Image (cartoon, rainbow, N blue to C red; front, top):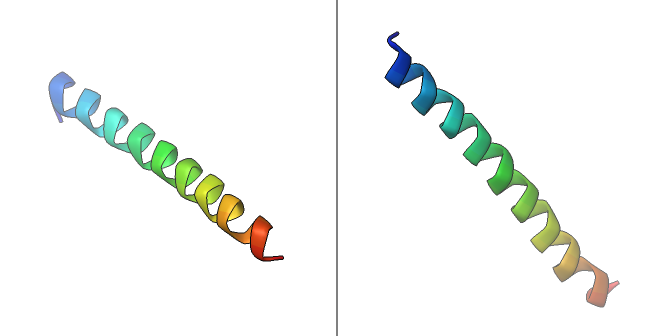
Length: 35
């Protein structure tokens, strides 16, 4: 794995974490009014 591929892999992992966080926040926002 060269330096460019490593950088892309790190960005991909960070992006996945951000997406998971946003999804969790969106799910919380949807569930609260229904409760």
